[in-house]
Length: 379
Figure 1 (tube, rainbow, N blue to C red):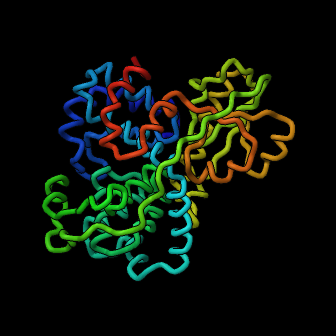
Figure 2 (cartoon, rainbow, N blue to C red):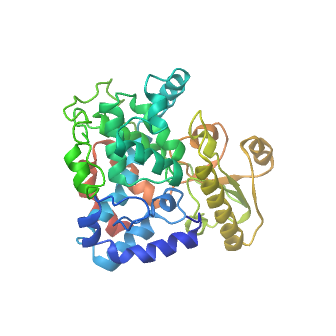
């Protein structure tokens, strides 16, 4: 998978005809690696904004209409919902990070076998191998995997989330953390997702039939309630005068940034995939993220007609001593954490400004806003 906008646009064009009924009827089936599936494979590109949510939803509506493409459009908006929910409760991310650090210092019995794919549960072990070898996993398989990890193997949910984050090309702080919490029954209190052998057999077309190997009647996990949502802070106006644009792994579509008329005199790029976990990131994740950043820098240099280069976190004090630095806003996650002490000027996209505040409650409260959001953000 090439980490470029050109590759993203090619995949978008190929999948657009399937965003309607074909996606709605086939999206839950996981035929296995290398076999045709009714999923877009756009997730790693959207995650890094090599292609934007707005572009993808616009393509679905143009090809099928909003009603026919509703299932696909909802899946895109889930990403924005998760980001908005976490933006209003950043303490949930901080708690997750602390628990991972502590948990990895003395992993529980069964953890080593689980991440090596040696549990004896054939479907789970196959998904471990697929994830490690490809950096991807079908969304339905991710739910089964997380449920088996939590309820059958009885391993801490946050260590499973960390394992995913180290290996998924589309690993995202909000979607990953909160999806694992949802499976565990912590996001929507008391509502958990249970992997059942019959469901796995049906939606893998009989590839796996784990009858008698799964715990199919577990209770949801119990933890303290998350903090109440807090308003998402407004961003100050951009400073006047020429600026340096800082691109980063969370947003690599500089061509569509609203810079309010500011002149960009140079572009710098930053990514920190190894900060995903105390155990870093897989080589596949590292290569994809680095390649995506290089693609973004190349396009930014061409778009603005200025030089573009890489920087590291330790270069920021020197850069900020001489330049006014603006950047697309980094959502709550491993990149925003180390950037927070610096006097950078974030740019919030209209998509995020409209969607994130609506993530205060559950997705069922968010979902009725989708038609209005589509009308306002896409037309």
